[in-house]
Length: 362
Image 1 (cartoon, rainbow, N blue to C red):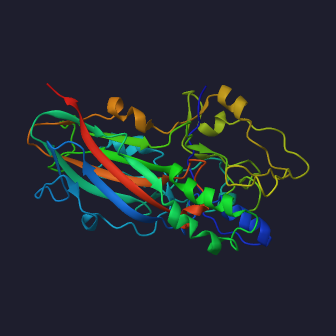
Image 2: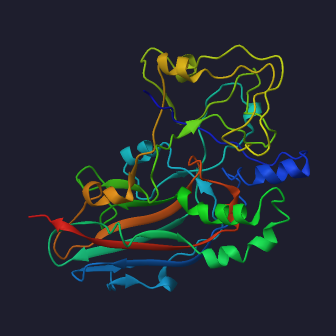
């Protein structure tokens, strides 16, 4: 079976919904909202093995990085690593994350378009790690954790009752704690010179999903403007967002999309179910027939992430004895993860990233 890659996410902000409906949607419409903040109570980056040392300037090495040396996370919003193959092929020195689209999908005639790059909304830190012997570096799956600050989240319930009147205290707390499940760690492996040419064979990019229990597709249909219906273009076709590809060399992505006949009446969903990923269908709009589209050559890419429990086998960074390796450590909220909700602006959590030696190289 082929999976499709989503190429775009439009800006949010359409008003006019009832108070109850708006409250319900605001809980689940965080994809590229741009108004969310992560309250990170503590970030710890350290080493499990004493033979390793770590630095932020490639001069002063120790076994951990003090919190005050880490970059600050200002405004934190949902971003995505879709299309990362493009900049990986160019061997960019920084990861490129995709953000919002510049126009509303309803102003677009075509069904597929690219997302914009974004320079903020996530944590990113350059670090240097070295060892006194030649080894493979990896993350420690037991000591690398994203944990909710349940005590702080519990204290937020009273302030959020008005914002989410349709939810019980238990549901509010669950959503606050559940934010961490859409978070990711990424590691861009570089060298010390800044020359990421073809002669540098160790260039690599790893995405780790600490809570991976399913495949995250980097595309699909969305309700990005909060109107209760999946987005559609001026020619009354559902918009396909994200990184879509054609597996048929003779067809474009648009030519692979097969549509169903439009309905004469709106197909709505209850406000309890309404999210940017689960919405209604507008009357007289042609819905995408995904099964037929897949059979016709359409594909959506899967996120290239590794489960935390698999990092010791799949995330192996080579170190030469006494030679530091430059790594861009990032963590971010993946917008295509269905656990991504607007509760991120209120949630508190802790981050612990721990590196260790996987095994000797020789």
